[in-house]
Image (cartoon, rainbow, N blue to C red; front, top):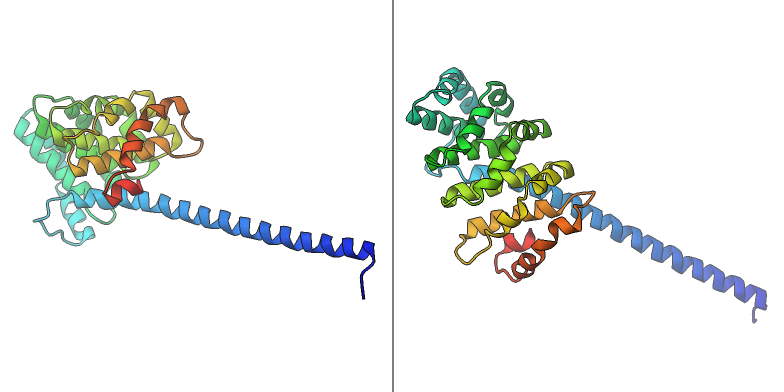
Length: 264
């Protein structure tokens, strides 16, 4: 039996509605999957930041359990603080290195306790010690670890004026100092769009792009790519004019054979 024209129209309308509903459902599932992937990527970026800080520790030293190691070091905190504020360069280096190791404990590093001890402004002072690159490096590493904590921890590093000094250190003649400055700026920029824009406003992009050269070590390429990704991500997005100079570097990086570089 054939359907009346009105009935056929109704059937077509119903089929169209089913098709639209199916398409809408598919689109929603895709959007949901994209959101899940984005969330997982956000988590992996933060996780990479924490794991990376641990990975740079001296491999020959077996850490005790995080809690016991932290408690043991905190007992000597007053002596470490005194060393940092000493006028003796060797004492400064030894104490700053101890703080760096304390902040590199795998689980729950005592960032707040270190901040409250009042050594952050001293570490920032050490960043300017071009005559003592080893001290610069240890201070930069300690501040990098502090900036990897909460937004309040990152703000302490910013408020003590570390960002423009880190930008300047991107031109350091010492490879380790340059790489640590890259990492520190990546942690600050990765905290929030506001922090990202602050780092960009200090002119960090061009000296960061200068790290992508034929002499760069793989670790530098990985860290610089990760930091560059933090300069470009977040909502609201940064002004395109601020990040546009990165396009040629990104074009080259997508041809990298390194999975970590490609991921970032």
